[in-house]
Image (cartoon, rainbow, N blue to C red; front, side, top):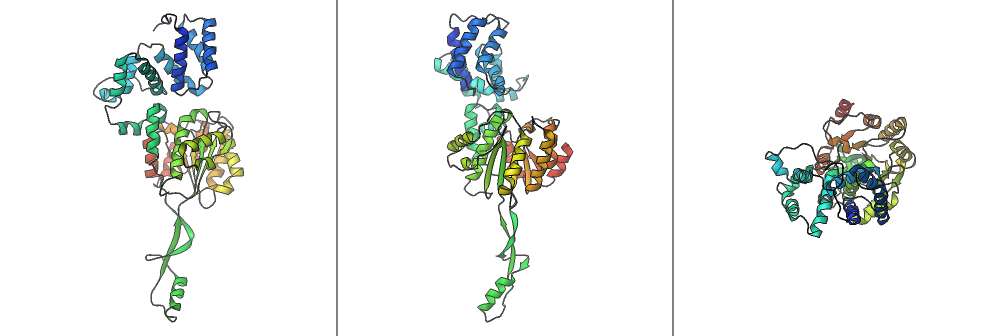
Length: 408
């Protein structure tokens, strides 16, 4: 495209307004006042150079660091990136790639949402009908279910997000039931039921005519979820809250009581919100209960408050804890290590779900990750539908602790 912007033919204001709409469709919060500020900034700074134009719009339209990548992709697409068509083919034609098309790089984060937002604009305006044909035909050339199951949540378009949420409703998270100290009668028990035999003998004139057995009563464990809602976890935390809501309202639940907590810069109890039956109402109420969405991360401080204020209330009777975070701590890592150890000792099992496991070359280099990892019993990904399905299938497997020690 060069360093100089293409001519706008006197439609600069209209193009900036459409650009703001495209950002909103791609998931970036952009208000009318921001668009007005962007127009004024461009008028004052000038728009002869692409770099000045890019930064003037970014300064006025973007308020959160997690939206920078989405902005970059939408800007490249909207202002006529010469590689637009090539990238669209690579993203939208997986079957063509498999048949021999060369691929230089994987789609970056937010590219799908950016492309979808812009193509929706073009469809409504009646422009570039050949691109409409690419979008409709190419997306469904392969197996939709297979592509959706393996796709990273961060790479999904808005329509694919809706399909993923629907698929999550059918996922389950089974775990071996816990044995209690109480016993129940059983035909293949491991202990004689003396009390049962004595009650039966009262109806037989004191004669014991058969041996009765009993076995320990089992019950489903309680589930406690601690979900990171900081900026780096926004997409994954929303999908995991959908997953948790599905577990709560499953027809035949595998769990006892289910408690939900979120944390970013503070800890919030969203249990009551997640028990609302309608999932949209539940997530809206959870958003109101947790004011620190898309903020910073202080995992150690959040775990400290949970251990101090909530652990004795919700971790009794062998509760299992799901810790959902990328482990990128911005606070004191020594405090994080202490609180993670205390949490591990307080619960029956501590399971860590980390979306960073989507990378094949993942290694625990960050200090926050190294502080948590020795204290967990299981370590899994949570970045796709397949990763959640595999979690349910392998949660009760053996040898997990040895795999964790190998990572360290």
